[in-house]
Image (cartoon, rainbow, N blue to C red; front, side, top):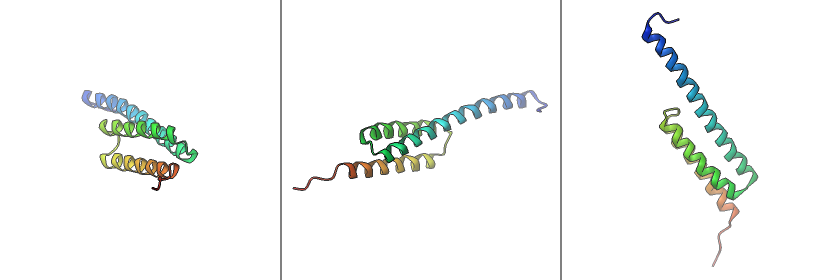
Length: 96
């Protein structure tokens, strides 16, 4: 246990931040799993909406400092790349 008043406050604030970060990470993971499930299901319209929402959640999580900026960029890039691949296979190009 802390012996100094400021150390007691650090314990309290650290616990609040830990819970806030935990909730943010859980939301992020849930969204990532949703996008993965929609990619497997090949539901293109729902995948587009979920991808936009997930990329937004990644950005918000990054801005809050919960995840590193490089991890956020990597996750966003992977999602966008996989969505683009899904869209390309779902709608084959028209030849002239």
